[in-house]
Image 1 (cartoon, helix red, strand yellow):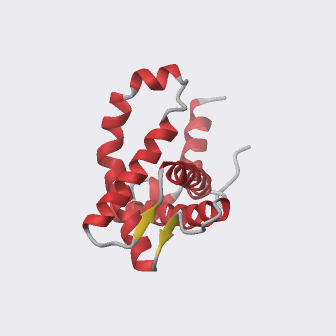
Image 2 (cartoon, rainbow, N blue to C red):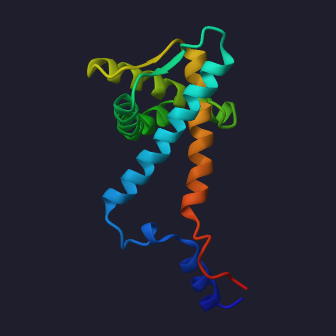
Length: 156
């Protein structure tokens, strides 16, 4: 395989909004939409799993937009610090402690939403843990779909 073929393949696999031609605000809005979809899925799964169905509550679409926005900001600021501080636990658990970090970030997001009177609530650590798992899975799946140029030319 020549270098030209590899560069052509790389250029054809990245979507238009990752090539730098699209403003940064579009990238943030796409990420925000993916996180909002994760929040909706997490609300459905968590409330389906527990008997009293009000363990993960998002009251309206305004609360969904605000909570997912706060989640993005809290995750961008707090997650690197928590990942650094829990590095020994990450190594001992072979990286599985990241799910606990994500649940803590979700609980901190609930606290921040409380400061701004956003109707978003989680009842306990285990619903936050399951919600963080669902948000991570939905984000992984939708990011994989959005990042690929499935309608572009095929590499041969």
